Image 1 (cartoon, rainbow, N blue to C red):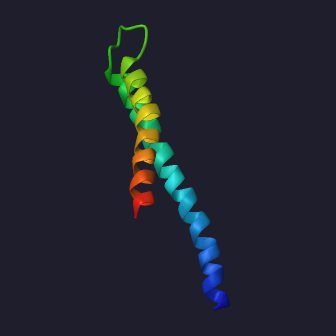
Image 2 (cartoon, rainbow, N blue to C red; image 1 turned 60 degrees about the vertical axis):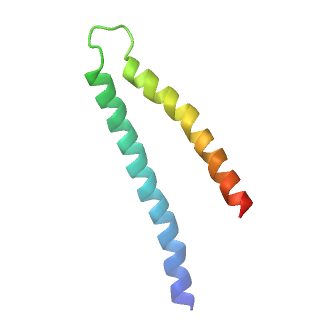
Image 3 (cartoon, one colour; image 1 turned 30 degrees about the vertical axis):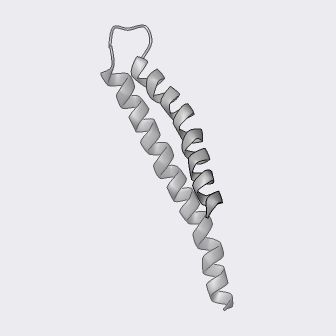
Length: 73
């Protein structure tokens, strides 16, 4: 029982770090690609602006919808 507790205590933080690295890395790559492939002569990289705005709006909306669905059950 004690060995299983040690593995669990080590596994969850390690999984959280790996998931964070994957999400942050993929977002960084996506932002770089949007900046590279949108309007090279524009003063603002509009792809990055639009995608960032979408993330700022979509993530709280998805969290609210998920909370409402989970709260009903």
